[in-house]
Length: 380
Ligand SMILES: NC(=O)c1ccc[n+]([C@@H]2O[C@H](COP(=O)([O-])OP(=O)(O)OC[C@H]3O[C@@H](n4cnc5c(N)ncnc54)[C@H](OP(=O)(O)O)[C@@H]3O)[C@@H](O)[C@H]2O)c1
Ligand SMILES: [Zn+2]
Image 1: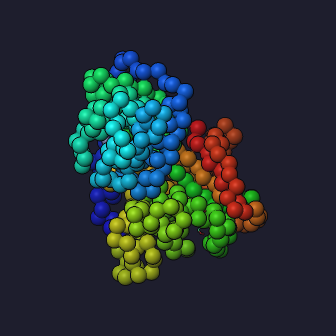
Image 2: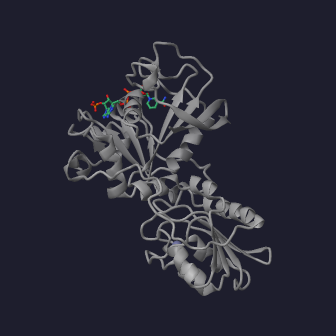
Image 3: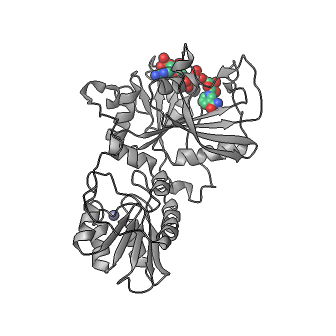
């Protein structure tokens, strides 16, 4: 456990970013190749490839690549893990015949910089591909159009924007972090039909069924950090880890999310031997945040730890504070078919005096999960 001496708790040296610019990069005025009908089909396959790395690539984005020649898929690959080759390299390596004259479909702009691996744009140029179809540009300032520039200057045809929305859904955290220097924040709650999240006594295990709880494992596996409140730790002693065997990847391959506990009164730090009492405190990477500024916390998670996706799994007070501060991007409600009554605890603790001050969301998805419903809302 990292205690309050952690630099996260010293916000004085922080310059907060301006958060309003969604698309910070401007596209170079180049002539892109027009999309063809079959491009959408192959890009969808590249997106399926990218999904194979969804839980393991953090902090890197999940990217897939398909190589097509004479209407045959001759190579495919995805980025499995930070530090390992990118999707384009795996796809080129897997090619069953010469890629000379082929089309490469990539779900994110090929990189142009030498990081832990050499630039993929250069690998594509050297391979002799004739055309590259890209779902979306990479807002990472190290790339931001330069991958496309390299390809174009090598005489390769480049088409940008095919299935961009679908591809972007895979990397909401990475894209937001690159554009705004803040992580993408998902707030998850398990509620009854009457919007209650725990009994007045604190008892809350379990409101939703096993399928919904399994689904939460997927959310955790997508997240670089889970933020919770001290009261949830004290009452529930949750593990807040990824342990599911049903995610299609070995659990050991998934980087465990960092647990961040909000504890302004320091009830969980500075008490001798307290680590033994709570599961999450056994983990020496857990952070106890004793400051009040949630915006600074999120920014520091991005800057200091490369955390791009944050999941809030807390009680109504912490959930309410994040909503009040306008820091939630997506609200995920697991609603169980039960009623807990008016003395049970609310979903969100938030003082709103009049209807015009209501917080509104847009329904993005509604799905049955076992005996429960999952509702995904985007903040307006
Ligand atoms: N159904 C669900 O999805 C779900 C999920 C999690 C928990 N729960 C239930 O929720 C209950 C606990 O609810 P809760 O609302 O008391 O717990 P909570 O929101 O998890 O934690 C509240 C505590 O967090 C601390 N905190 C630190 N910074 C805060 C901030 N900026 N805003 C608000 N609080 C901050 C406060 O103590 P300090 O002032 O000392 O810092 C506060 O007392 C438990 O019974 C648990 O079982 C339900
Ligand atoms: Zn690359």
